[in-house]
Image (tube, rainbow, N blue to C red; front, side):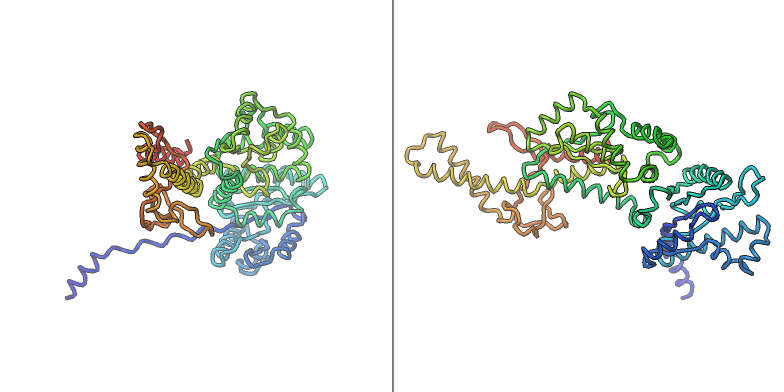
Length: 488
């Protein structure tokens, strides 16, 4: 009996290991000694509360993990101090995982107690770099020594953050008045949220365009609509006024590449370098310099005359610049822009987001919906009207008219045999939409024959004219959806 039990146990498939908990969001508040980090953290604690945030004074956490507290810690050699700094950041990480809160931690990158030294002493650990997801740096101290210290830390932090996939921004002077907004944005924003916002923006544009919509034309912006590289122009203008060089080229060529994190960092660069008022002014000046290519202007003029066409600019650059440029060109009512550049935009336009947006559009066009269904209803009404007219003069019908009558009669009978909700849009919006093959979007088959035609479909010529071809449309939409998913 024992042998059998042992054999049964050996035959059991071991349970898969539980996935590790997701890494928490932990924000470092950095700055040189005396720069006001603790003051900022206390202010955030008052404004944002502790329901979703956990606040840590770095030195207090170090004291809590060191036998003898902070006094004992100060007497250790550098190797000993590094060990307890590591324990402190791991404790903070553990608390954030257990409580599912975003951590905000005051900390130091360096100390520079001896002004005779050429550079400050580094006090961060690799565990710090592995743990922090964002670093916000406090500046604005005046003495020459502290200014040198700040300059060293700024250069070092930018390098370390880029190498370790940490988002970085300076708090002074432009983000100090919207720090709570920055924290809230960090708390909720991730790749999934970004894609959701992008899809919602596209849906809003398509819905607001009206019932005549049949075609959406997606357009890139910089170097496609105009010769101007608006992002490069922005940083040239900033350099002329502030002396700040364009950080984007070096950043995108780093290991972080053109990722979601990279575009989020670019947004923080824009927030960091100028306040909202100056940002608006610079964007307006760039828009004045941005002249659309003549061919693009002609294309948009043609689109403006066709209510069924909706041009949408999808840009990884600055949304506000292109909205202003399109407005100056006279196409504000025709062309819509999806892009980012500031926290208030709610998203960053990455190559993946652009691909998902096209994929989302293709799926919508493949589903069919109220536009197709309403046109079916109209067709039934028109067919009935024609049949009625033919019946009234049936005694003098020619052979061709009799054939026309029979065809119309069959169409009407077919339509009348369908359920009403198959040829009429749901008035209250509660009805389930159907997919390409007449299946509800929740997966349940629908009774009766469904006549919803995809908005985006192919027709094949027959003896009666051009008719919707289900097979060709299916192949076409499958290929288009696959290409959109791949970002082609």
